[in-house]
Length: 343
Image (cartoon, rainbow, N blue to C red; front, side, top):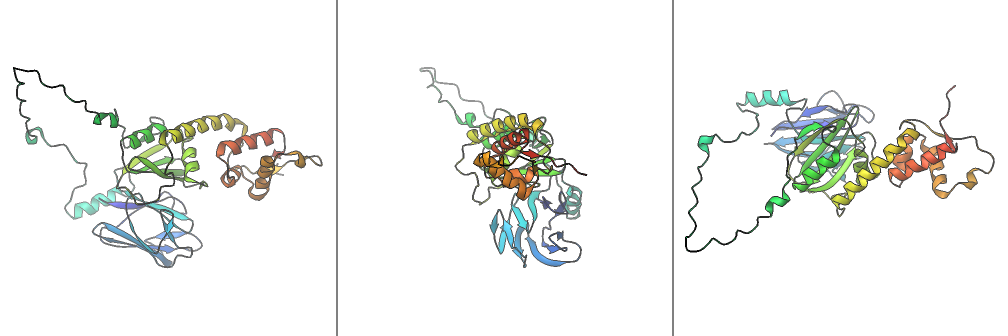
């Protein structure tokens, strides 16, 4: 199985790099906080070593260290679905599928070795064993009633494609399907200029994040992804990963119901909210007006003065996104907050 790294943040965001089957893959600093992947000058900060498809990552002196699945480590084995952060750059180990930018290079490498990359096919009818006819039941007594097989109740009654669009299948539908079937892997979501991912371990949501807007928690990132109504998704099945689930103990049905309800409520507020990158400021208020605000409203005013943009205010607020959006809308309608006019 060919593996690659998919860059989630940084100058190379969206790029994929094919990892060697045997050999080394150098990650170096390209000046500032940007990383260079197996090319160009710069000081090596980490190295990926592959030996017979077994990949390990070693820190060679990254300024802030190397983090694998949010844990700092000097050296660690990597598997499909593992997320790595070095500085402000994040990337994920992914399986090379037919949609991958490096699929052509992976096929060429396999062809040079005399291998074929293709999906497994079902055995031909001739190769399938012919089942024997069941023996007739005894004539003297009716057969005992068959025990009801309940195993099928745990399996989904339909199948979803491993790649498609969010217009065809919503995130809620996808998560219910992959969790109900007890699968492990990474569900990647892609919209224009951004990417998100939900990691599932044996039918349980383990982690979630969005590349462009790191949320304070995996749960808030998951709930934000429910507001992505357009774009593409790719399911990459893999082995369960030994990470500490950020969402452990959370009821799947409760989370999905809360996420869908929050998404609907926020969509109703979007018409009253400026775009995420809009800078806000405190309005020209009469003397003593700020003293009449409630503590939650004063906290929002403080975030506006510290961070400015709508996205940054929401990201830095400890409450869930719906609470923050309602506070922002209320303060904007009362002109406590405003959008500064440019000269």
